[in-house]
Length: 177
Image 1: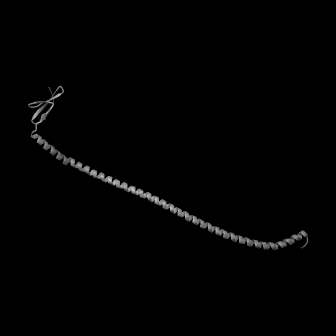
Image 2 (image 1 turned 135 degrees about the horizontal axis):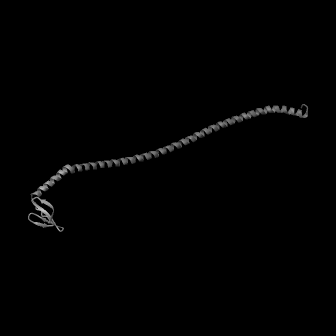
Image 3 (image 1 turned 45 degrees about the vertical axis):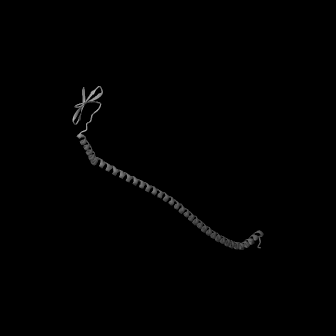
């Protein structure tokens, strides 16, 4: 028989013996095939108290700080998520306000443009009307002047026509008429 390891059980020593793939456990008084006999004694109480103490110490030293950090991180993440949500909402509202402002500005700009075009058209009509009236007045005045000049020239020519007729008659007849 070959020994592959030794296991201690407070009061007795068990030897693990391997024979052809089967495990045999030998104790101080008995041999068990494929099993361990556990005899509870005072060490079990000590182990339970030790385990509870270890859990208590780990809870104080390790688990509570970790849970506190996790809780703080969770609160921080929730706060950041709520802030992100509110900032997204604000951004959406500002975007809508910006869009409506742009739309209002375009509408106002188009209205102003139309008003300016209307005003410019009226100004153009007024200027054209003034120029036309002035041109009509100038034309009327020029016509009157031309008529007056024509009358002057006509009277002058009428006097000269008689003179020219008499001269032409003399030249044609060769004598005074």
